[in-house]
Image (cartoon, rainbow over all chains, first blue to last red):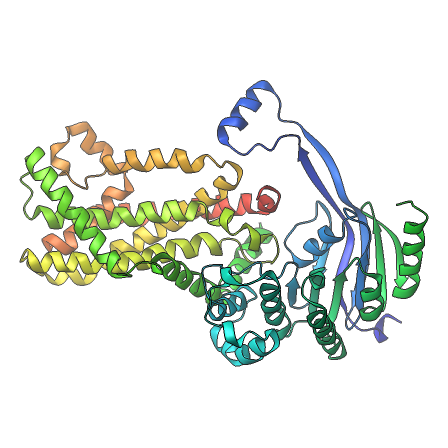
Length: 253
Length: 265
């Protein structure tokens, strides 16, 4: 049985994520010493994820759904390697193209052209590779007219377009997408969904976070429902989405 | 233990993979720095020259120093110390100012302090042209030892990398490190013979000076560039040991602290 299945790309193994919610953030040495003297260094513990386990196999498209604060984004950050789980382990086999917030790596003072190279380097690609893909990126973002304009003069939609174009031009084994499709106009959203579908057909694995059941049903075959940091449902996207919608309609969370 | 070895090995592996990123970040720093100024990179040469002029005027009237070729003496010390100061100031906040990236994409975090030190190093490269200009204008003799001028600079670079790694990690937890270290650099500057000769100090202070790495770097640089002599082994050992020790300390502190950066930025 195991032998016939495609290899595991993401293995989330009993992951818990604990945060110390300091009542007041201690950010300076002076404050820290003062509080230590007064014995006020206390933390409230808070679990964003509690013992979450699931596996994603190659070529699968999995959506994470759930309400605000249910731990979806934390889960993505653990998968992307940005956060280390407090307990358990998360292993990813292969390269990751993270789209957690598009344009996060842009330097506002630089032009679009310069930012394409900078952002490419952030994702681990050198200049030669980016030279090759430069034209495709700008074509997709439809930004030829603004290529030498500093990004600070861009509208937020333009920044998103550029970010999306760079992140999806890259061929990665795993694509991690966090609610980035909420911005941008209708036409561009459509174009992005097409692009994601295209990548899925080529065998990329997708991990997708969204509030929109419609998008989840369209893109993903499987969905994982997180509720207060615990998995509440895991199965075919359509079923889990229906369950989730029903629970929401019944006014409970 | 083997696990720790693996960690360092993966650090080195990442370093090769992310070298283009360091390059991009350094070009970005340099571009942004001079983007809006009319003279651009010329400032890197002009600024130390103007500083030197002001200081030469002040110090040669106020304190009588009998250092031969005082302008050159000054600018040698100043160039190295400016690099030290700039890389510390820019590097300290490098993790904090890259927080938007660190929160969203996995990147080895030591890239940020290292790229800041590297861009300061490149700026110092431009400033060396000012040193050369002063040598020409003051008719300072050129000895063959000047070919070795890069040796103290490399030692200093490694020293600064170590120091900035540690500082940038600490600054994440304690934001007031910036102000604290501002005072430290000021004190450090006066404690380093940049505009006065070490002979002017009382005996005990001269002995204490042996524990100031900046003194050794500057001393080595001046000896090679100005005086054309190669100092004895003590100076070389002092430079190598202090830069090596600082680099190890920096890496160790950074590795210890980096895991929880994400929770504080």
